[in-house]
Amino acid sequence: MHIFGLVLFSLLAAIWVLQGLRVARGARTIPRIRNFSPAQDSACPSVSLIFAARDEEEKLPAALATLAALDYPHLEIIAVDDRSEDATGGILDEFAGAHPRFRAVHVSELPAGWLGKPHALQKAYEASTGEWLLFTDADVRFETSVLRRAVAMTEELQADHLTLGASVEMHGFWEKTVLTFFALAFHVANQLDQVSNVKSKAYAGIGAFQMVKRRVYEAIGTHGRLKMEVVDDMKVGKLVKQHGFRSVVALAQEFVSVRWQAGVRNVIRGVTKNFFAAFGYNVTYAGFAVTMMLLLNVVPFIGVAAGYGWIRILAGIAASVALTVHAGADIASGVSPLYALTHPIGAILFCYMIVRSAAVTLWSGGVTWRGTFYPLDELRRGVV
Image (tube, rainbow, N blue to C red):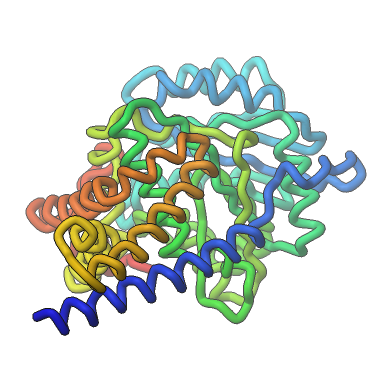
């Protein structure tokens, strides 16, 4: 048993040391949009900013105010009211009446074989004219110069697809505990620093901001290729890479912000449809991910508390690197690095969210999203 413990904690320590070095090196290579000067008018191609909204009456006004203030010469904004049952449609129509570059599209029925959001984004694309398409969400807020900076970045980095990590507004201990671990896990699992490497299979697409050339979007099949894909934002990035185009991930920080979910309960409910979908609705993949998550992020702290001798030393190495990496993610997220101390708690909650997502999806036989139920068999067939 002691030999098994030594082998286990040696592996955990080695994995975390290698992971820590990779994250530290990669963090320096991920570009920041603040480091790019806004493009001049002559260097600004036409952009269609696109989003779908369903029952967003509470968050829409603040987001629309930032869209109205965007400083960009060749911009059209197309919002799709996706079968809303609240005042969303009226808010969009009123905004369109006051802002010439804004258009509202209304969807009253959802065709068979489509998820609501991909269908809404497809309708917006069909109504658009821009050389670049910027997909975002109805609750995202933009700093006025972000489009000029993004265009300058795509030009300098020769990107066909640019996705930005947004600043997530967080309140309260539990919300910060979950979301800082989420940010860490997303960065590590998706190898964000390798997305721009054409030799790497790493890909990413962040729903708050992903900008893609129109011809590239059409080459990958538009959202028609993602009709039944719940994690459509990530899969846009995947298709871009698979088709041989250049994809870049950058950090937006204060230039793009969002209040994703209010409170940890809403965070947990909000990812119910996503987490199992991220594993292709495969129980084996999800179970393996949970097992590895607990081994890497919880077991080292148990080893520090309950182990002795070399086991405690090796566990301490793994735990120390994990805390350091987490502290870096906290700083990047704009919260106190002391939240690194919540690392094992965040990992347990994250695993719970994966298990809950799988259990609810399997028990229900599908996913309910935007007021519509989609059978699991159809969702599995639609995985990209």
